[in-house]
Image: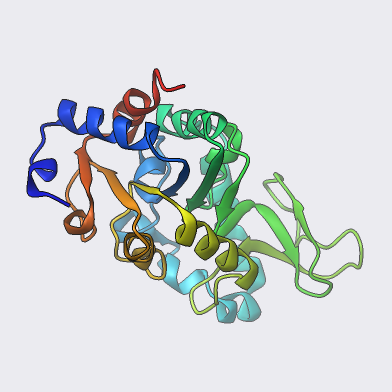
Length: 252
């Protein structure tokens, strides 16, 4: 990594990123809250993270669901309704387009809104789950569920067990099978593109280091510098919805 790559202006950085991607085969994209924020997805953190005097960190836990599943489902119902009219932005579509053009491609996302799938991505590893998927607390079956305004607590159509959002809550481990796929892709990739993530939340914050230690080029796209900027070969400052279409556009 050379300092001159880091000091490129945005146009030069976009061209450098495009060249790196076009000359390498195995590509991994890691996305965080920033790409969803450009679509208007609420963060549910800080001043926007309160609902009925509860913080998100107090509701998105196994203990909260065990104590008052009705309350937790009411909160997720509100979240679902806020997402109903949210659409993917050009960054989501650019990532889906890059997948089509790549022989070896993996998308890893920390987001639970499902916007990548709506935009056409096929290989999304949703490490924190998906708000539009439910899981039975009794038999474990998972299924898509886009219902809002639940009347009472939602029940499994197979066994009648109580359903919960298929989200990785605070205090829960990420699914082992998903993490295995994540690390397999990071260990073999030639290029890791980091989009809209702060590099703070673990274990995703360590993914760039895993790829870098295995010889991968790292490209960062964000509106500001982050904890991962120092290890990035190219950093492109700007909105993902403006930057990624320019990086992906014109690639064969």
